[in-house]
Length: 347
Ligand code: SF4
Image (cartoon, rainbow, N blue to C red; front, side, top):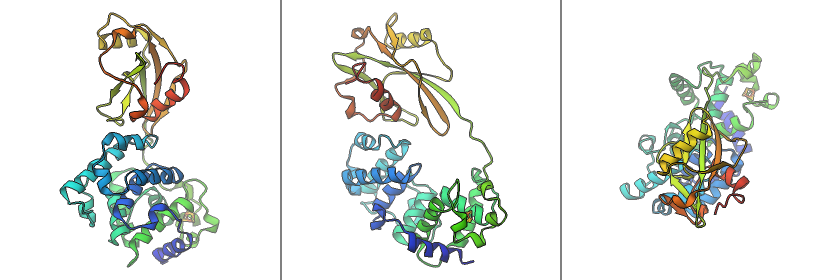
């Protein structure tokens, strides 16, 4: 079977007209590849167009304020992607004289660029021979060749990489990589793959053995932990108290002051925590949402409550802002503001 010829033939016929496919500019390809990680295509197109219209080239991103990049990223999640984009744009602009690296080896040294992105940029923009391995490629290859190496184990990456390398065509590396990813996402889908109309069906081992649903193999079931977040809403002279987050997944975003715990805390514990934080004997607080506002991440189930603080005039330390719209915040903050913002004087 000429696997790569079939993929290229399929791609030539079914190539989607996506905004970043109208250029080979590495800046655009880089932005699109980073946005598309963990993001649905429709949402990715929307965010890509917004991002490129605000930051049309490397320089405009490099000289921007990180806060503006995070503001634009709101709703996409995995904010380290935005922080790394900004960092790397500044680095290429100031340290590499705005010259975007062409080789896989140079690209992978950049912050936020791993094996997948380095392979994608070097093959799509510079026709370098590097196979991409994303979820679509893992799934398609594992089914067609019945590869039972678990895809969530580090050592398996080498196995897939070497097979993917052997499958590469002699030219058109960028088209082939994009074709294989598209094929996996449109035909060899995770659930209900389109086997009966698939051009690979005659050569697909898992299809012949009726074992398609067993692939790709995963070894571990991700253990999801609970995290309880209790926020306080403090409004003073029509300004809200917010804090900049120093670490974790929401680093450099903003939020209301928070109490974190791995287990559900009672009102006394929360009150004690905030009283000490604001150097008060006690604070008057009343629960705003009787049911937790939940936010699910791949490894974490976040349950949050919001408390309205009444003895606010005694609290003056911190960042009081007129308009929180100017500050990048997580989806969880926005869920709360959308539902309760009007009721509790969020400005
Ligand atoms: Fe995927 Fe089914 Fe095609 Fe095999 S036959 S490659 S499992 S869609």
